[in-house]
Length: 416
Image (tube, rainbow, N blue to C red; front, top):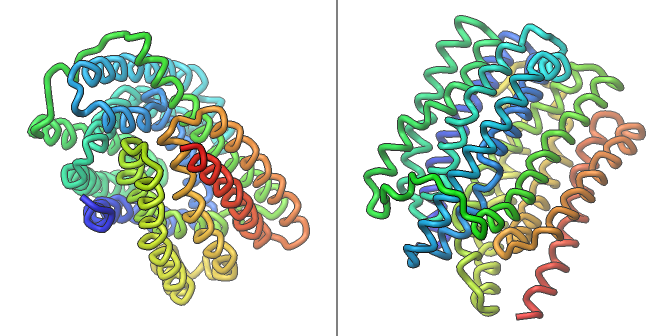
């Protein structure tokens, strides 16, 4: 299956996930305004962090090694047994930590200890979310994009129903609660779909500690945990800085534009993740790698340019549709944000070489350096330009990240 056909399936699944996310944002914007959207962003950052860490952050490792071992039954069995052991242990650890500090987390993130119960629900849900992550990673590793799209579409449909029902009952609290419960609900779709696949074996549900495979997965855990920790934590720091300097209403405008970017880029980042990670992991010849990278730029980069241009032209309509007329001040932020989006996708295509080839420490160091530089640029540019300075910081930081990844890929290909 090539990138074009894979993108059709991933686009279908991504559209369903996107619709579910937009329903949440629209509902929150309608009854809580910019401030509610800002707090929604804070909770979603925590949720994305815990969702990734629920399984020990090894999803990328499962995808890579399933792609490598799919024709080696013995090693594949060892890998998946170790992965389940790792995921179960990590989810229990993360769940206990979230339970112990639920009140402090609610106060820190949402300025309201009454949300502590919501954090406890998220903590208990960690094991279910970890199993969902495991299933999706195995299906992705086998490059079964049709089944993956089916799980995403059906799971997202149930998520939308749950969000509508709970938000009408409990307003903002209900919308946030639905985000948590709907993640676990994906099990009701993912497990049967996986069982009916031709590659499913009962041994894939065996839990066993394997030192060699655990160490291999741990390398990916380090990379994923670094990325998963830094991204939401940096965004939380940016929101706190903007709230302190400009107020929560301004944070809502920044969050709105960021969510629009996340929404349309989700189609492309999902295609890159689902297709390129297992594909690049299974290729060791220089010519084949170069061909895959060229195809990525040939198909994906023009797509992001067109999508960014469409969003910019329709920015006023998009803002009113997804949020409300109260968010019209956000329209001035789209230009630099969309330029940064194009640069971001160009850098992501190259950065997957580090993941696919398990360049653990180089990946970790680069994530830390560029996360710190982004935060520093936000401080500098918002002091000079106000809220739009955060968008300038985003674009300039990804331009530097693109240059760094170009050097990494050039050096790696030169060594083959």
